[in-house]
Image 1: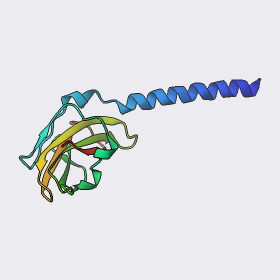
Image 2 (image 1 turned 180 degrees about the vertical axis):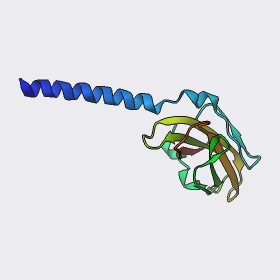
Image 3 (image 1 turned 45 degrees about the horizontal axis):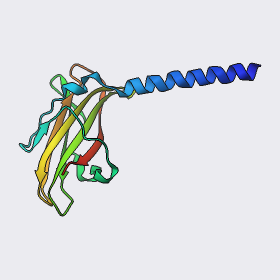
Image 4 (image 1 turned 90 degrees about the horizontal axis):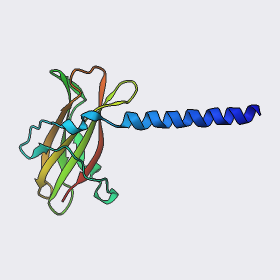
Length: 145
């Protein structure tokens, strides 16, 4: 009897933990996506393209510095270089998360316009205004063309 009750309590705890994790993954601010860029070929959007493993382009993106406070917001800067033999556009999804805890505070989406093969472009994302102890995480990079 004791082990049955223990199993039921464990299952309930796992269910609650899973619900909390799913809730933490959502970000109400993702619909308010804004970003800045040091390149005129980057823009912003409020929706991401569905993840498709065959469009993964994470290897084409690097960061050029640490996540740092810029005014009242946090900024992550980087560079994208087209490694393909054909022109590509890119979408870079950056999450701003709490430290510690890794709760998503803000999500920004950077769209980089079409780059010729071998060409590169600088990009940056600003987010989590007013928050402290933030880390910037590149969640996903995909080519869109």
